[in-house]
Image (tube, rainbow, N blue to C red):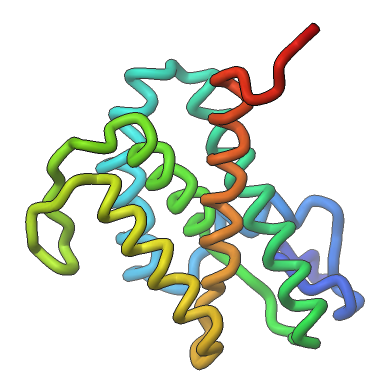
Length: 166
């Protein structure tokens, strides 16, 4: 019996409870893996230095899980039966985190190679993911990327006191 580690849609009959984490350890090819690891190094290394290993792990897990939840909702609404793989949702969570912590830091992205503040880069990438997701013309899980950003945003808000304790 084959045990799937991809994130299968709920209605596919192949969904398993471990998939909202395991899918992030699989990738659709060498380029997918390379760019995820490049982003993990570019944005994650500084975030881990600032937050420490515990919070860094928490943001990765929160982004991965929120990306999975959003992707499961989108595939349910669209009736898709395709599985999802990759750590891109976690990576987009790191990207948003970097933009929130260092909004005025100048970065030079690969695409486009134009120096810009991190907050603008994050906003452009978020808007681009939304537009591409609404276009729905590829096999890329654009809404999972946005879900990763949402999870990171909510966790950072919680850490900053967005959920006040009494």
